[in-house]
Length: 212
Ligand code: B1M
Image 1 (cartoon, rainbow, N blue to C red):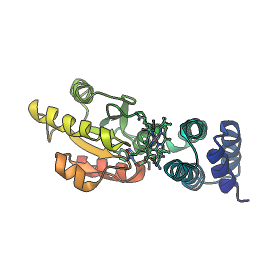
Image 2 (image 1 turned 90 degrees about the vertical axis):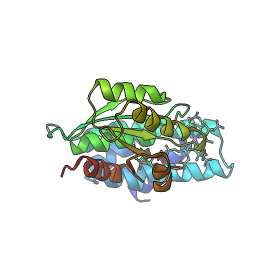
Image 3 (image 1 turned 90 degrees about the horizontal axis):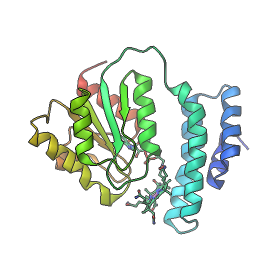
Image 4 (image 1 turned 180 degrees about the horizontal axis):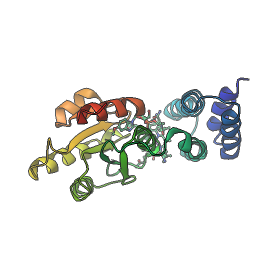
């Protein structure tokens, strides 16, 4: 079996030790960090999501898979985040109120840091006011919000409304993402942009700020 397939398989089983070992082995074998992420960890998580959706597995198994994902990501993070890159801008990120899914948001943060942005990560289940308060206080250029539940997306709209009420809309840009979020939703709520995945989040944030 290809080493990255076997990494994906370990993630599907929620075996954090095996995920750690196989991620380390792939790094030592010289596999590109982006391949380890996409063909190993994310491929495994995609299968987990599908099995959960079709009731082949249940929440405890998904929790184990999430824990295993973090074991792999912890090893990959230093390779995805470059040191001593110029600071392109400050970005506040977080998963919106009521939402505990943070794996995708963490990836977005890692990629933004790797591209040279300073990232202030508010974590998960973040109230709308906190995004805005922090962005104003820390003079951030962008607020990035993540949602994985259709029921929590409404919090993103609240962030945009609070920015508008405080006359910061436009000066502090907003970008939204996460599986149920779309470009159309971003337009509807008045967010400045939408990104499909972590790599495109970097491209979109750069475009929002007009940096190379
Ligand atoms: Co849950 N969950 N979950 N879950 N979970 C989903 C999201 C679900 C789609 C599963 C399913 O039914 N197939 C479903 C949501 C349905 C819906 O609303 N449409 C669901 C549900 C229902 C639930 C619970 C309600 C289950 C329950 O309790 N009965 C519950 C809710 C808890 C809560 O949040 N209040 C719940 C709980 C959990 C766990 C805690 C067990 C765990 C999360 C652990 C953690 O994150 N620390 C979990 C997981 C792991 C998943 C799945 C299986 C995987 C999510 C994931 O990490 N994907 C997920 C099914 C799926 O998505 N296929 C599912 C990998 C990650 C890298 O992708 O997060 O999409 P993603 O991020 C991507 C892009 O979306 C994008 O870039 C990332 C990287 O490419 N992106 C951005 C994300 N944020 C962005 C921000 C940006 C730009 C791009 O700009 C700022």
